[in-house]
Figure 1: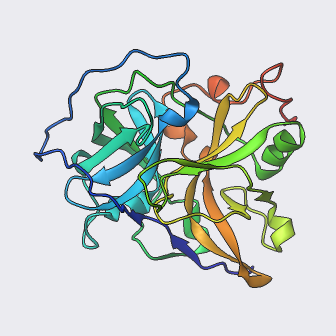
Figure 2: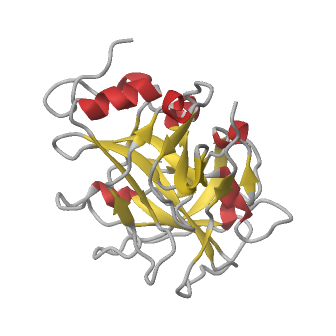
Length: 278
């Protein structure tokens, strides 16, 4: 099996971030904004930071009180120990026109592995995830449903009319979400790797800070389904000059969520293209 050296992409925010004072078991409180029909699904993706660091990652709201992000993002504020849940601050719709109040981590609901910033082995990419319960719940945004699909199933959905997009708060002149639509999901066979559905490979460039952002399928009505999260980047095994984006298949953490599998799978019909047969 060919080895792809992956570098995680936790990032440095270029603008000073306002820290929320306090530590211990303090929770971020704030008024919740009522949902608006015009608020896009992208508002469910937020910037993730810690109280005492200018580094940031990205996170995706998968329940009103749960986000998923990359496991290595817990090492934002120190290389000696991972951040505790209450040190994490999630800012949904960061940089958007409608300002939403931040939430703070309360507990870890599940984690693939404890992974530090740096390089990831192939076998570690699929473990680079952590589910964080947050407070207060984000009621102004519809959480993004999580889908369990094989890579072949994802490719079938794309051929059937779904659009693949990635989104994260990578480095740039502003702290704002960027949605990338020119990403192609690659099969393991295409790369010459041993078939493995637990981690995803894309031909797009992920930026520093994109870690924990969403890899998403959009149907014809632009309804999202989370099929993975961004883990890092490497290089094509056949050409080291070509970038390779790496992600975690969302099926790895779906069993740790409270939502039933039936509601997490993409639905066939007018909104989503036909799902592949089992």
